[in-house]
Length: 197
Image (cartoon, rainbow, N blue to C red; front, side, top):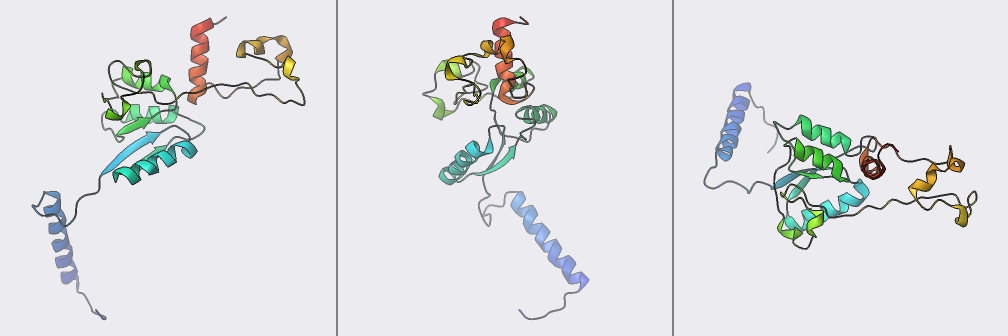
């Protein structure tokens, strides 16, 4: 186009013209210049290394762009659940992919979730779904006891979390912080089973 001087009046006219086009497109002109991009916003507390490939594959197959907010390792699932509670009157997320059920139950009890029955969830056993349709479980979690084989013989190793109550393990065992993530669910399950005992 070459060098051309544009005056303030011309800039204003160009901006006004651009604004009219944007407003016309926003008002649903009969023939939009292009189809608006479909997007979905998802809050994810599942580890990124596992969730990101699933989300990218969804984008590839569906053509829907995914905006993702991940939780931090320090506040695993608690951070996003609190964010959802804070945004209750102005929701920002379309989907919450939690890594444990406790926060999901709290969100349901506080009327943060909406009902949704996915057509893709047909083969999931009823025991892994909410009867009212507020959530669907689609993965399982297992806890293991890991130990240093240079310090503990296989025959002496604890076989259960209850074995760790033996005085010989005092000061020699560690667990993840039970206030966050899936460890909080594990602690809640233990409390439900044995109480304060």
